[in-house]
Length: 183
Image: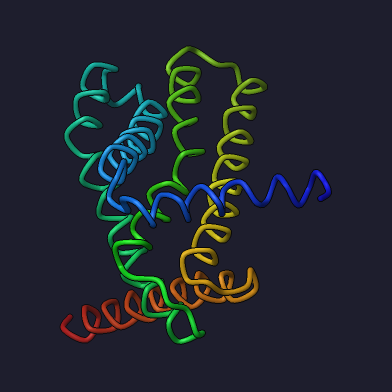
C-alpha cells in the first residue's frame, strides 16, 4: 500500500471503529471545543472592541452551543443527502463523523493566541493562511469520514457534502426572500 493510500485510510478505519463501538464518544467534547476555538479566534481579531477577558468569556458561553449546532445541522443534512446518493449512515454516525472532522479546527486555539498579540500587517497574514489550511483539512477529513460512514465512494461523499451546502443555500435564500417580502 502506498504512503498516500495509507494516509487516507487511517481516518476511515478510525471512524469505522468508533461508530461500530460507541458513535457518541467524544462528539460533545470535540464539537464544544471546536465551537469555542472558532468563536475565540473570531473574537480576538477584534480586541480593539472587546477586551481579551470578555472575548474569552463570551467564547466560552457562545462557542460550545454553536459548535454542537453546526455538527447537528451538518449531520442532519448529510444524513439526507448521503441517503439520496445510496449511503447507509445513520444520523448518530454522521454526527460523530462531523464532530471528529472538526479536530483540525482546534488549531484555531493556537491561531487565536497568536492573534491576541500585537501583529504587524506583514505578520497578520500568517494566521489567516493557517486558518484556511485548517478549514481545508477539516473539510477533507469530513469528506473521508462521511464517505466511510455512509459506505460510499469519496465522490459520493463529496456529493453528499455539496448537496448539503446547496440545501443550506436554498433555505437561506428562501428565508431571505420571505423576510424581504414582509418589508
